[in-house]
Image (tube, rainbow, N blue to C red; front, side, top):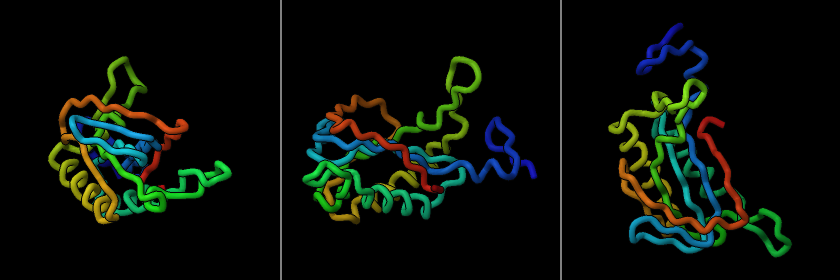
Length: 161
């Protein structure tokens, strides 16, 4: 089975390897435009062609409950929900940049802006349902993101894992 996606042809099994992707950073504070958060998470999120609302829900649940904040002994024991942290979410299609050929990244694995916006907004909605303070960047905009990484702790999470 061969599937054509954009300018690439993928064989049947390859479509199952793509998934909604997030890079999360534990922060003391962060800011984009005039939107600020204190202790919590910065989440860079990318959407690919086959992602669904279920991927957005699964990824948001994983991030909200991921135990990456330290207890008194310094061990990862608390989630952003446990510490009542804050979250800054930034859409970042460049997480799907393929640099395996040539010197210019190929972004054909990233979803179209129309699809990506819909799922990004759904992902943000799921995160806001946690009751925590959630702020966002501007979809499809160039932004200056100020991050005070705590640890540093930076993790890559995929919805299909």
